[in-house]
Structures are given as C-alpha cells and as structure tokens.
Image (tube, rainbow, N blue to C red):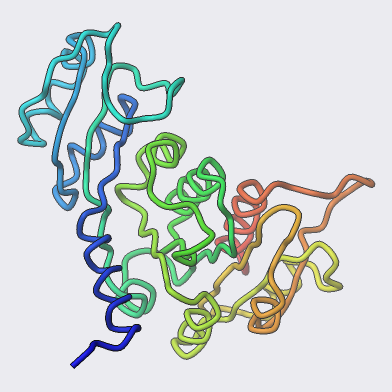
Length: 260
C-alpha cells in the first residue's frame, strides 16, 4: 500500500532534522556551547591559541579538539566570519514543547514572538535581550525565520545556550495556544492608537506575549488578527522607528517594570 504524501513528507522532514547540524564559531559562542551539558557536540576545531584560551571549557565539553593551522582554518562557515580560531559542530538544541516551556518554564510569564524575522543578527540580539529580562521563550515559525546558525549564536553572545528558542510550525496556532494558557498577546505596530505602556497597564499582572514583525513588512494580517491588542512604542520626533531587536529590548523592559 502506497503511503500518503503527507506521511512521506513528515518522514522526510524527520530524517532531515535528525541529520541537521550547526557550526558555531567564535570564542564566546564555542565556550558557552562546550559548557552546556544539554548541547550535543560533534566536532571541535581550534587553533593552538584558541585551545589555550578554552582549556576549562574543552575539559567540560568532553570533546578532543582538532588543532588547525590559523592560516588554513578549514571548516564549513561563511568566508569572512570572525571565528577567532574556534569552531564547534553541534546538533540544534531541543527545548521541549510550547506548553512545557511557556506555561511552567523558568523565568517570568513573558514571551517574545517573531513573525518572519529572518536576519540572524536581529534574532540573536532578541535572544540576548530576552535572557537579560527573564523571558521564558522566544518563538518563531520554522519557515521564514532565522534558524540556529553560527552568526545567530555569535550575536546572541551565549544566550542561545540558555534562552529557549522555539520554532513552531504555525505561528498563529502557537499564538492561540498561548492565549489558552492565559497569555495576553500585544502586537507591536507603529500605526496603533494605543501606546505600549497603556496596553501593559490594561493587562495588569497577566502573562504577556510581545509580538514583533520584520522591518518593512511588519506583522502579517493573520498575526495582527490573532493579537489581543495592538500597541506602538511612543517616540519623540518625526523619526519614530526602531529596528526589531531594539524594539524587542524596549518592549521587554516595559513589560518587566509594569506596575513597578
């Protein structure tokens, strides 16, 4: 009996996921990954100088490094990447399910949702801010968003190892599941009539999800419709636009000090 197409696609996706690996690079990103017991590590390539700097982390990681000539650092990362003589091949982290992380995970009842934010540097910066302000997760769709990459990890400056980054099949579905958990979803939209402080004041002490879109396109129509309220970050002057990572940091701060 021939398998249905959807079964074949699901099996293919599962095999691809099992085979997926990520090359992290840079002293900070590699150190944090080596120190993370939840991270499955496959191959460590270092220059002699980098190995001297990462001694304790190498011991903790339990992986024998390959010592490379700094003039021939032959690993599959983008040319021009500032690797500082350190690269580590790993499996992507598995943080668990949405309900597990967001309803009862560590941190404040606060999450960030990114709608088609594809720049790894922006996502890395958002992960860093989310960790600083104690958010439970950063959530993004599997397609049309930045996956785990070396560039993302380097920008996150270690936060990728500690801050849950959940990739979901359907963002609107994940939003509805968060609402069922009691989260109030605030979509950031520069044209909204309500300001972010006003929206947060109306939420009180309830759990909050901050929903941000890519620069330019902003939030998609379905995402806008699923939000509980739309709000803007108040700005002084004519030029009132922040990039998504800066907007996330401002919104996270505002959400953590509400009522304070």
